[in-house]
Image (cartoon, rainbow over all chains, first blue to last red; front, side, top):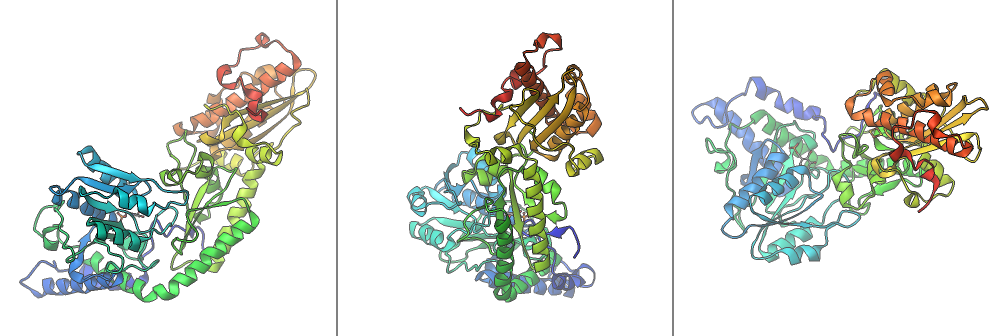
Amino acid sequence: MKTPIYLDYSATTPCDPRVVERMLPFFTDTFGNAASRSHAFGWTAEAAVDEARKQVAQLIGAHPKEILWTSGSTEANNLAIKGAAEMYAKKGNHIITTATEHKAVVDTVKHLETQGHRVTWLPVDGKGHIDLQELEAAITDETILVTLMTANNETGLVHPIAKIGEICKRKGTLFHTDATQAPGRIELDVEAQNVDLMSISAHKMYGPKGIGALYVRRRNPRVRLTAQIDGGGHERGMRSGTLNVTGIVGMGQAARLAREEMATEIPKLAALRDRLEQRVLAALPDAVINGDPASRLPTLTNISFPYVEGESLIMGVKELAVSSGSACTSASLEPSYVLKALGLNDELAHSSIRFSLGRFSTEEEVDFAADRIVAEVTRLREMSPLWEMVQEGVDLSKVKWTVH
Amino acid sequence: MAYSDKVLDHYQNPRNVGSLDKDDPNVGTGVVGAPECGDVMKLQIQVDNDGKISDAKFKTYGCGSAIASSSLATEWLKGATVDSAAEIKNTQIVEELSLPPVKIHCSVLAEDAIKAAIDDWRAKNGTAKDDAAPPANESKTGESKTGQTTS
Ligand SMILES: Cc1ncc(COP(=O)(O)O)c(C=O)c1O
Ligand code: FES
């Protein structure tokens, strides 16, 4: 077993070797520009792009013509949100979202807010769910877009996309979902789920970085977007720029593998995740699982460890590549805004760790990770004055601290 | 974040972790920081009859630099006189551990904890404060004993 052990698949995934194999010829031999209509180099590239478009479309139940290539989900989110806001400005200027979205949505929406758009930030409950009735009540004739992610990148929480899509359809507003964390991990079907715009990214599904896609519904209704990048009119004029053929081919292959292997991969990874979680909780019963265990990605668990501080914990488990939502507020890092939105107190937000598993995770790695975490939390607790006070029966919330 | 070798050493092999009896008249206890700030430091000194610190212990909830700062502080405290201990400055800790700017406040916390422990011992023993330099951060550390009080 090689260390450090990679348990950060929600940050990015390695390329599947089968993806790399498919991409390689496109760097050197079949390197044509997919927009070159006058020779075989261009035709070969275009055919490969078409094939990839079909593969990505199949993964989410779309038509190939509804797939638009971008540089990733950040760009797809920007295009969906800003493009719709501009295109439908005559209809209204109201957008609905939540505070627990990825920054690529939060900051895009905030940008529009400064430009005069009205934004409803739906509150979330302690698990991260929005209230669907509240969503429905918030939609008015002025509402042009509801943007809510499929699965949260920090807690893994899966929103009821189909229900949200149904509400938006019934109320006549467009629905965009940032599904970056979802492909291969949960079922996606833009028809069944009534999605109008969906962002996905290759590097979260064993494809290369720097390539992604935006699904744009073609009928029922036909969604139109104002381009955010002008130029040669590629991608139906909605996103100009010479296509990243190599990346696109890789994303297509990654989508095909995700679709074919989901059925076996999901139960395997869910079992590994549960194993990790149970091993940790058995030894540290007061550890807290963040999010909603009844509705989350099969690959992820986000756990807070009371009485120890997150940055020191990460420092102690350097054999593990995991994410921490936190560090002391006095340093440059703020505790996770997502966990804060769920109402976690600072102390718990400070000590959260996100473990995210993937295609190449093994039982051996998971057991090692669980044991390391348990050992380090135990060691740090022995060093923690908070743990000592709790053992002595002190109620930490009643202590008068010297806030500095 | 890259840590210096000395920070890593103190983090991995912290010196003098533990607790002394806070009700012992010869023990001074300082608790500074707050959980919502991400750091709480408890530092204790045991003082013998001729004003020398015979033992020092700490417990810290905080980042690796905070753990290292308090661990180092206990090393310096042991064998020092109370008066010389009161002179320890956070800048000396920064220098010894090569702390980067974002971690300077971890060393400030250690200095505050030392002062708070000394104040507590002095209060218990009725030693007039003005026979030594006044604590630099008195306003912050005045509540040294409040770590255990409820409000
Ligand atoms: C939910 C979510 N949205 C958007 C992004 C950004 O995607 P990309 O790196 O493709 O721009 C990420 C990845 O960090 C994500 O997890
Ligand atoms: S204790 Fe706050 S960063 Fe060190």
